[in-house]
Image (tube, rainbow, N blue to C red; front, side, top):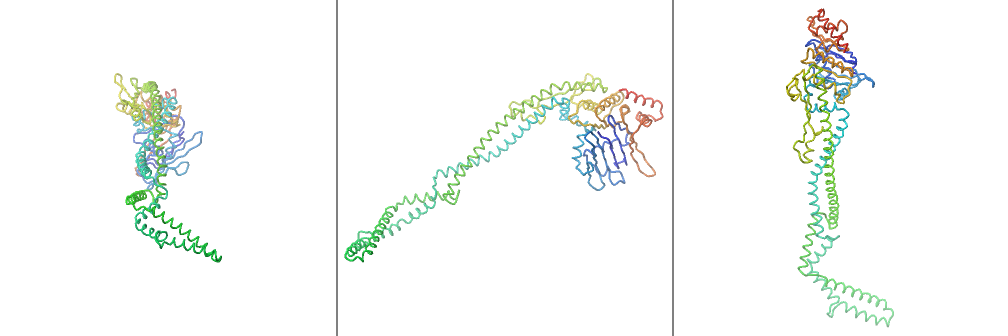
Length: 555
């Protein structure tokens, strides 16, 4: 609970220390005395922005501190607004961020000022309230739906990204298929570029090569009388015969035999070359066309025939990967469709439960309003489907929201015979305050906080309604600590501890200060008289104030 609130140099408050107790704590004071400053102090702790206009004139800085005590230990938080500097937030004496302090405090207290009243008019908040009333029965369904909805949304986004990438993938697949088909159609062979270059050069110079090699063949093994091979054979025969007479010539005869055999092989090779030499112009044209085709492929896919072949293999591998990715996209689409169906089923179960519980919630609120002196109040909870008119699964899913398939709105009427209208269009400030208290008394919203702080809860309320409001706050205070800033004596009489705010002016010093002090005994009785609009020594007012205290003690 909030054990202590300390304020230094905040606007008109020079120094204030409020030691709060469990149950109902009331802060009262005349209009303009500075009750709203206490709400501002709480707001600063909860991260509201503050400037130098909040610093008391002449002070170097404004400081708000709070001490919380629970079974888990103590927590001290502070917010400092230095003049001419940036504000600072502290937690247990250490520097922290304002957002971290706010997050920590939200687990311990809930602050209901005019802003909270306004939030009650928001349909999103009304859905929170209905679910909070339902408690665990809806909480599990909300958790189930939220998980299903998020999964479906995540898969939808993933599929959208995949399809976006898929358009690029399709273009790449088309390009790779074209490239692979082009290379395959050309039937490129390993090393073909080098071989083709040689054949092309031979074909381009076929005439010259034929002239040269043919002439050489004619000189070596022609049919003329001066053919070299014929001369070698004659010389071979003559030396062989001479070696039969003189053995010293045998080595020479052997050498001539080898020379004749080599010349004969050379002549055969030249003859084969000449026979193979193609001087047909059509052959030369075919080689040129093939060479140009291969050079075109090499300009696109590699510096050699081998690199072109390697490119085609890589293209085929990349195609396999991309085509597998297309199959994955189909599987993802099926998974997304199943997730959407799951989300729709979960939304339907959640909506059915909300519709079943809504009348009971509305009846409870109406009963609470009757206890708050609104005997003719009527209250309804209306749920409307978000997918009205949707026919396809996709349309129904798109209509879903993070909270389900339904919009929730509260309808209210304060008077007999007047049909209920949306709460945002009908409720006055006092009616809205009572509606908020009636609902908040039943709904914890899952925050399970120990402290509730109410500012201006009693706006527009008086008389019998004020007494009912005090009793309702007292019952709520039996469950948790409540701090209420009020101008109603009927509410203040129910307090376990009351603090009074007084504004004092010192004409000689030229200053005005707001003082906050706990009031007990005679001081409290005097404060209640003031709240009743009478002087502290007014006998009738004192009897009235004492009666309020006695009635509060009996409730």
